[in-house]
Structures are given as C-alpha cells and as structure tokens.
Amino acid sequence: MATIHQFRVFLAAYELGSLTAAAARLGYAQPTVSEQVRLLERSLGARLFERVGRGLVPTEAAHALRPHAERALVAADAAAGAVRSVNQLESGTIRFGVFGASRLYLGSSVVLELLRRHPGVRVELVGRHSTDVIDQLRRGRMEAAATALPVDDPTLEVHPVFNDELVYVSAHADRIAAPVTGARLGEAPLALAWASWVNDPTRAAIATLVQSAGGSLQARVEVEDLETTIELTASGEADTVVSLGVLAQLGERVPRRLGWAPIRPRQYDRFAIVHRRDAVLSPATQLMVELVTAQMQAVADKAKRLGRTRAPNAR
Image (cartoon, rainbow, N blue to C red):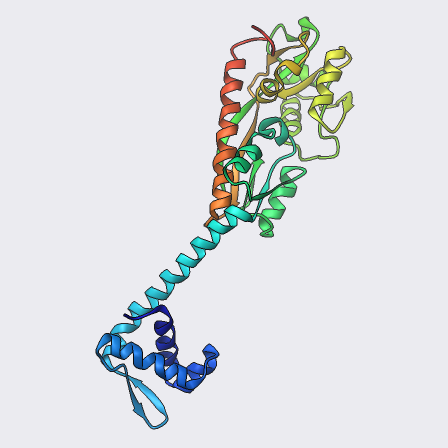
C-alpha cells in the first residue's frame, strides 16, 4: 500500500525531474529516494518514471497519480493540524481579547467553565479597552476577542452579540421620574467611568446625544471604573449612566436607594465577537467564543428582565 512518505518523495522527483535533486530537497540519501519510488511503483503495479540521460521523465501513470498524491499530502497535513489543535486545547494557551468592563459581564464563569472542561489549558484574557484589543487582533497577537462596537476595520469580521441599553441612574427620585433627554444629560451632575479612555463608546453616545440637543457634555466626576460611579451616585452627590446589563450583573451590590430612568432616544452599548476576516479559528478559540457568547446572551436576558422594572433591586 502506498504511503504518504512515498507520495512526498514521488512529488519531489516528479517536480524536479531528478532523484538526486529530490533527495537533496528532502534531506535523504539518494538510494533512499530511489527505494521509495521503487516501492511505490511496486505497490501501484506501474512504472512512474523513465530514465533519460541523467534525468527522469514521468510516465502517463505518473501524470495520473500526481493530483491524487497532492491531495493526499494536503489531507495528511490537515489531519496533523487538527491533532495539533486538539493538543493545544488540552495543554496550550488560549489568548482572548476582552473589553474594559468585561469583568462585569463575564466574571470568572467563562474561565472556570473552560478549566472544568480542559484542566490542562492556560487562559489569558487580555485587554484594557476595545481599541487596544483591536490593535492586537490586527497584529495577530490573538485570534479573536469580545469588544465594544463600533469596529471600523475591513480586515476584521464582526459578529454582533447583543445591544445593552444605557439608562440614567440616580438616588434622587425626581431626577428619574421621566425619561432623560439629551438636554437634561447636558445639565446633569454626572459621574462617568473610563476617565483615561477618550474613545469609550458609552461616553461617546452620551456626548453625541447632548450635542444634538445643543449642549456639551461636562462630567462632574471622572473615574476609571463603573463600580466607583455607582458608589458616588448612591451618595447623592452625582448621577451616572450605565447599562442595564451592568446593573443586572451587579445585582444586590447596587444600593437599594438607587433607581433608574430610560434615556430618550434610546442609547446602547453594543458588543460583538471580532476576528480577522476569513480566519480559521482554532478549536481552543472556538470554544472560548462559544462560552463568551453564551455568557453575554445570558446577561442580555437578565438586562431585558430588569428593563421591565424601574429600580435595579425591585422585587
């Protein structure tokens, strides 16, 4: 029976027209190449080459064999790659990009589920914010990521996961008695997160809404994390804008004195799975994508349920 090794030798000899040249390319001794061709001919019951001077001339049988031998090598390489991918899933490293507030959406559940299924794997969740993650995707430093939209790059493929509605949060009942407009946002004493990140999509959405009403967004307090904005809002010194998904995930950690009102027109944080266009994701990354997508969709369901109430901890 013909072997992959024999096909590899045959194709080298076919292309180069010389057993000596084929041996040099493959790193074998010339008698070894000659023996492999002879064994292949015996297996197939046909002569593959005719000697002409110091060279080889393929026979009709060789011409007929060539495309099949090439496909066999491609299939063999693909099979080896699949095995390597499985081994990577069992003992390699998964490097996956995440947006800045991902801890509030994903928590530890995704990593714990991955470790439960594949105890030998090593996990890296990387990314201070979506802009940094997109840059690393472009550079090939990770295969895929969960990021905030928009992503304006034709080299990347975007798979939206869910839109998380933004709401106005306050400890003052009169401030959340009705939907909040852009004009009111422009006058509000806001505490906003991600002070060092000028491209924060939440801040951009609010700023655009305020500008459309003829104002200019001026935050009273700027910090680096959403939890601090919630604490400041609970004190009554400031109000904030966060998503329903964040409020749903924080759950009992949201002080009971806080309530929220919708923003009009509606504004959203939008999230997606992003990878390089036409990339074939490894099984490890595919699994991470599945787990992250499922978790984000679970958060979306919680946010929808919360959206039917007017306070984060309403019973």
